Length: 280
Image 1 (cartoon, rainbow, N blue to C red):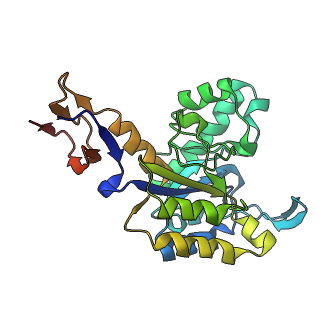
Image 2 (image 1 turned 45 degrees about the vertical axis):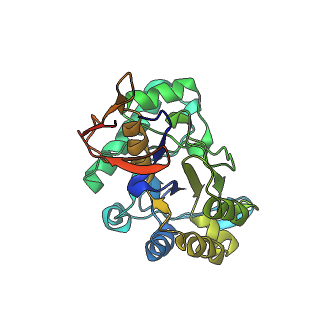
């Protein structure tokens, strides 16, 4: 068995696109509808303690409708996507003692799990603030990944899923340039495009056409791109890291329940959950 084994994504694809949008404002309705139209998938980070709140706020100089969706909408609105935690009431976790931070996360998880009937294991840092103590709190609360607001402008998988830096915000001046690089160039390893933002920003600046143009462009490459939620990608990568190989590299065992794809000496292969493969 050759020694060069490269991870591929679901279906043997080399690229994955995932989105992450925060706060659960009413503008998510339009964004989700647009994502569904183009087959784009992602994660929505919600503050369950703020559902149905009405009001406006001045954000980045724009008077903005910050009204939140209702709890009753969550399961149907975000069907086919992931619902993740953004804390109960959107505090900066670095400003709270650990017990209060844990309560914000656990209460939000509990509420969202009751609404969706799904495990909630994802997170986005309110205001993008975090430190080592906050990461420890999240881990103790059952959170498996957390997104920052630090753009990389690159396509690498994170070294630490609790410090998951996205590729870029949708307002990046380089958005379409980055998208073109991602879609039209293959590279030599698995590539991740992680886009993030807030749906109210499209209404603020009246630039919904911009994100639709992005969706329209990347959807043309859907045969090459795995459209995934954040947690689907996390589960896949963690499962891939569980693969076991014999000392001589001849035997490969998949102890997980997930089908995993890889490239071996230039050939695309799949190992099913609980399967053992021998290469001679």
